[in-house]
Image 1 (cartoon, helix red, strand yellow):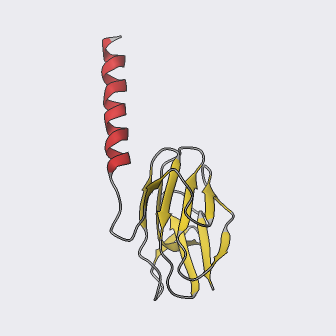
Image 2 (spheres, helix red, strand yellow):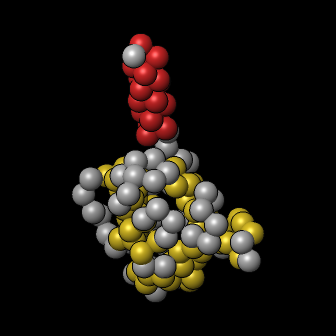
Amino acid sequence: MKKLIVALTLFGLIAIVFAACGGGADSGSSSSASSGPAVHMDDTHFLPTSITIPKGSKLDLINDTGTAHIIQNGTWKDMSARPSIEPGAPKVDVQSVGSGTQTIGPFTTAGTFQLYCTVHPGMNLTVIVK
């Protein structure tokens, strides 16, 4: 019983540390209220997989299941990670642990930008900014 309590306590502390870790300056922040267009994340997918937003908007990534995700610039192609950042794209490095909302952006340049979850092969998001 003592080992179980210690294990649960350690797990809780690790979860708090991961939740407190943010990305870079442009990566976004946690928020309970939606600040703009939204994309949901389940265990292994973005819903929808493509979204069109107005130039200057921020995008809310909503983790519906609590599954850990690391969202960065790039894409999965043929089950290989292809990290890259298109000119004009905000740098995205979001660690989403637990359910909740992360806001990324603003997207200040018109264009098509690719984001992906580095943890889940094939989990791609296309952001079209007009």
